[in-house]
Length: 74
Image (cartoon, rainbow, N blue to C red; front, side, top):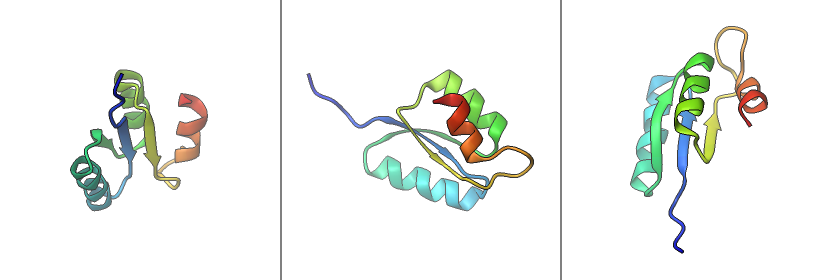
């Protein structure tokens, strides 16, 4: 059985940074989910897509952080 590269979720509120990460991961052959820009989007995409890996922005706007996403979704 051949194992491909995993599905990756990028959570980054700065749009330029998220798209740079998204593009870089795609060019490396990863299956990348469209980036999430906040906690709510990240939770929804995690539940819908079941990523193998998430790259999380620790300092998100409002009350929730990337650490909250990791604690609640892993």
